[in-house]
Length: 640
View 1 (cartoon, rainbow, N blue to C red):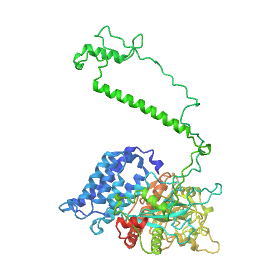
View 2 (cartoon, rainbow, N blue to C red):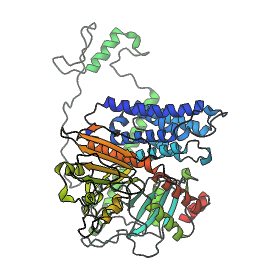
View 3 (cartoon, one colour):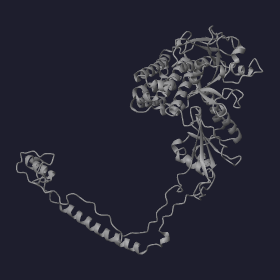
View 4 (cartoon, rainbow, N blue to C red):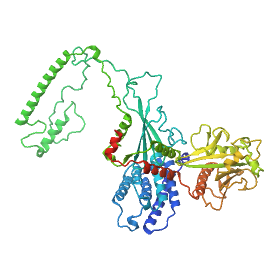
């Protein structure tokens, strides 16, 4: 999709982003000033629309200072402008800290070259009573957008691919000691830090060195967006450096060849040339026949043409003034002191030269690092180097205390909660003349026509189900549901397609229940039909299947779209019933329609919680249950 945007005029992109940001501001402004009812899902969708545009075309937007300022204003309004007590809603005044943050964001967005998302994040994590938030869905969407921009803008996809955005490393990995402890911290009640020391792996190719640290520090970070880990070690290792050259202690230059002197052009200073005609202005280039000190000529000219520039007692500017008596004494004293210092240095060098150490001590020995004196030495060092133990973080960082097993279970539950929207979509293929469920489910890969095969390849990239580490959508990694499946993902969404032609067909079971078990439980179906009659949405009978997106390939190269949804599902897009689209835009529009259809179905379900809200809730529970109520002095004492 990003490659297609490269052909679009940047002004069009700017107009789209600016209009969406302006509409968000207008909705929130009307709500605050006139107490108009606001459609929270609509405003949240517009914020997520901004996110998608910024992630796909963020280079152009972030380089446009005024445009990114308008985006930041919209996000700021959604973060801090939907709280009870706002001055625009009739209260006496807004809190001073919120007003200050507002000014900071506005100044940064109009003067900085980069988007001040860090300032917006600081406003988002600022503790606000949840009961005072008037539009919780809007604020949740704004927090999610800001965090996504901080984490994934210009960072997606990573070296591991788009399917892996968070770390799978646990505190117990690579640690041979059972029951090894780790330090858990919480920062601003929103970010969890886990520090653990891991034994350094042995390298058979290298000889064991006593200077090599036995352990290294691993930090695991968890927040509402995902989980990340880094391995850190000290930068004190001479193993890979070049061997040091043995240098003798040579304090004098006796017997040592000196480099030749640097040649200098013009050993003698340029001779001054008095001017014969004082009315002639000196040139800035050397046009004289012989080399002349042009500065001397210029000073001589100024002395005769502008006598008012001459200091008192001075007849010409190109002649040095007489040195004052006091200044002359200072110069003489400095000169004598320098001569004495040179004599003392020569005597000292002579004494040091007479006391040359034996040759075996001529090599410079490498400094040996200090060995750790206790556990978590490198973890504490890393904490200190990151500045988390400074007084500036007083009250911001706290230790997680309590039963280690309970903390580990809570963190495991948090890790199992996906940070992206997970969508599974069924793909139904109808050959010409097929109308019954059994015949449709019996289709296999050999029944595909070239246009349908091309469509399958374009709607997502094929993944190996045996090695895939991300969302599987209920498919089996042992091959019972096929070897590959179409998959598509962004930083906000994971989508896997249950293609009935990719699943193995059972010759002994006419109902193909193993296929219907997956396709029948999908809320959204994409139907590719080559039958002459219109598709009947009840062909695959199931209590789910709320949305059917039917694709009819036409003889002129276009594709006709029919969209069917149940009565409780509202109208959505971008594809609408009766549209005809080209092959180039069909895959991206199908995916976007699947995302919106799944959203309109699942968001209407009672008790459904978005992935961001689910992780945020679990993180808040961990903080409330295990955060230690100690001051900064007790925190430092528990760490050191």
